[in-house]
Image (tube, rainbow, N blue to C red; front, side, top):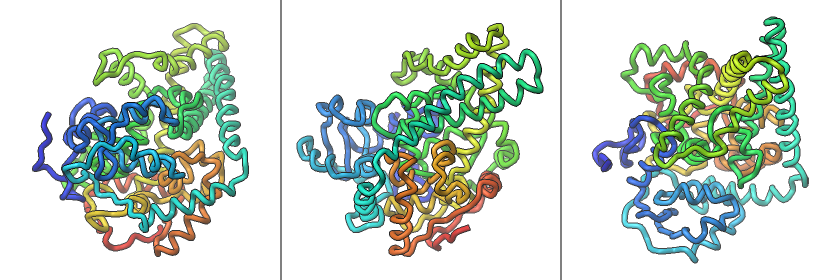
Length: 444
């Protein structure tokens, strides 16, 4: 499909609208396909206004093959700037340079050397040297402990449900909470170089490799813009963009969102299996597709119940896990009615990427400094978005640096509470009036 060059983004009218954003099924692969059409990368890798041939570097990439292989033919400027902190990658680039580009970037974001983000990155790199050695192991201990607890509790829930619903049901809900927590821990790991803990994310029924595209490459880098596929995937059931002509059903999403949250994981699991089986956009069935089914397998073996009863209990726990996962995810900071969304008026046509992140996050203050809540509930969200490859256990050490930096630039980290974030999410689902972000937002 050729791009419609006349269709423009609302907030950034100088930019083309993502050509395949409204195509079905809405998948990570289709999002990348659309970027290949519009990014002007000429089947190479684009960084700022230069093209590079990273073909020979794919297998050498320290973070793993996927990050480079997936992005061939696209503009990876935002990913390159935010995923490489120490300057090593920049030093290697000239070796792979091919030529300058002939078309402007289809992105509003800048990374000026003296701008907000690049100067903050320099300070954070220096601060990382002062973080106590072994801090990352705290995340490993939490993840492994929760995984062990999930094996035990999910099996107990299956065993108990057949004997007493009053005992089995609470255990099933607890099993779902543990599954949600384990998957969110997996999110901490799939942002980084390949490692075995990233696979626990798949226990929830989704695909860590797809989420590396839809979450790490789309949502993280183009938060709340037309290029944020995590928003488009929720449509038409949940429409977060402030369109003036929302239908009554779309506005009612502010009320029925708990239903959507609860069925999300089962829907993702079914969608993933179908897309892989039908080889959608190059997907295929792999051993990782079996990971979600490890839970009912050990529930069946350890719980000692018939297979049909085991499957019923597993699905019930998936509904519970889905609700917790999506509730924590959608209240993490981006879906407040006080945040910037496509359709609002941005501060400027071109904006420092770090400043944009401040406009799209409002931090849950009741999670501040708590590592367990941070890694299991998408906490410390400002720093996680600004530096996604840094472990959640390390983030709390960096907040003084971020606060000092914001003070220098006269910026404010807006905060909220978990309860207020839920209310604010509903307000955003009903919001139809654009906000003007040329007027600086204040803390709430």
